[in-house]
Image 1 (cartoon, rainbow, N blue to C red):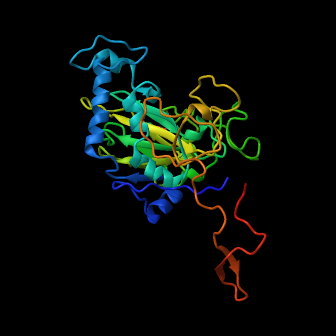
Image 2 (cartoon, protein in one colour):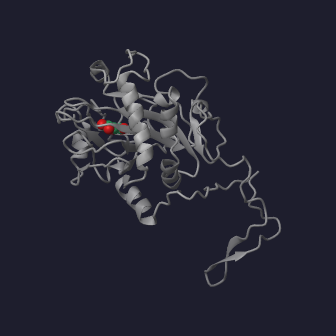
Image 3 (cartoon, rainbow, N blue to C red):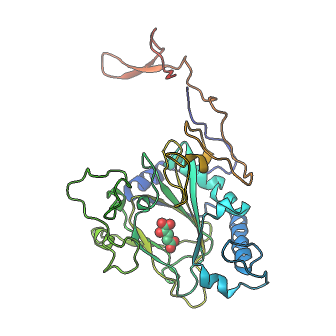
Length: 338
Ligand SMILES: O=C(O)CCC(=O)C(=O)O
């Protein structure tokens, strides 16, 4: 099949700068300030209020609807996973076109949406110790990326994310017995096992020693509408919310290149060798099975096989002085890989 991805032209399309791309590759994360418009953040925040007041129900926490947040809800949940499979607004947020614009540049052109987590982190609660996301979600080849969407101000006091810039070059430190789980099993000669990944206590969490090798560990304060993209080997963490009166709400979603094979379904069973057929193709095309949005969130996917590339393209040929020049294809050569 001939194929070329087609970025769609929308008036509000976000175009990633070359400097942003290179900074992402260098540091393993990219903060895009104001990526999501205030109205869209307001819609996501209203949905979180509906959840907390019981106007919208979460399985396992069915409360009488009320005008005020139900204290039992925040007692029960600091975060809720995979709501995009249950709620239209969650699916819409996961497939937000401006987030997909950035993903298309960083890991695309073909993008699959895998996972969503809605964080509430009420006062005194929440936080996750040093970890690497590819420890939890497998993609082959590894193309996993997170998008951390701030729904309200996140700062050091209410438990924003912290990152170890450059640690995205580390391999994934797997736990003992996690064989066959990560990208390169049994190929490293001196690999330490991860012990207590994600534990808040740095004495117990062995990844804190890896993070300590990176001198520029830094908090990433966020304003509502800012989005932090982070690579799946990047060491990152958060602390509990130490304010007395503020939540720390964020919608955090994970994606991969749609050509990656994904034997992962949030710990739930799936049929066959991979769960790709359960995950939504958000941009581009793929040769792998995929799901469509269950709530009808519109996506701008090209027709399969509609790309350019079938014959007639000039090819680059070396001239005697070493330059590369565009020439028409010589007979017998083709750029068609059918
Ligand atoms: O937002 C947080 O507190 C932690 C999020 C995180 O580490 C992740 O999504 O991998």
